[in-house]
Image (cartoon, rainbow, N blue to C red; front, side, top):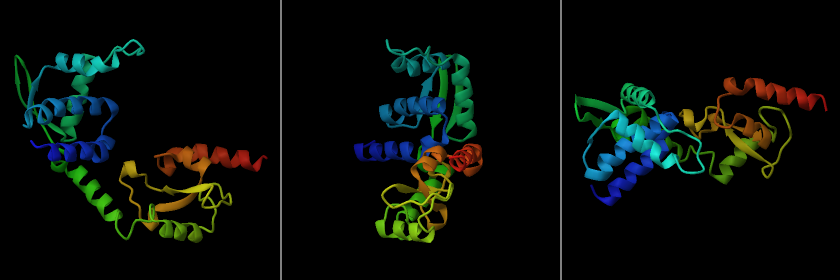
Length: 209
């Protein structure tokens, strides 16, 4: 596989696939990807569970790290979850190891959908990066934080995604609201439902001052 194709795979894994995986699943998937496509250019790799646990853990077991690395059962759970998500397939089981078929982001339906939405959001509907369109959001929201009502300026506030990017939210006008830095840091990649208690706590603390 040529270097250009490998670069595309790497970027797609970071941008579109990793957000769909837990940290442990990322570590196991990246390990299998490294020993399949990045090593042989093929989508097949054969590894034992104990080998995966040992070799995935090696970089994290330096002198400054307190982790003991991944356990056998943790790797089993991670591979099962990756298989359920259709990020890998267990091709066959042999004495010398399990043969895994590793899926690329372009072969995973959910990744393809996220990538297509990101591409669409980078055109005229992108209100997050275009300065003129960002100003439209500030004017629409009358320069007030959507969450706490604080009056803000373009310089001391930001735009927040109602549905976070990590949860497939786009950069459309409907998905963006003005937010002060503090509320934005509280929400930080979560849905409103997930952070509602903390946002309410901030409102109470402001009203008590």
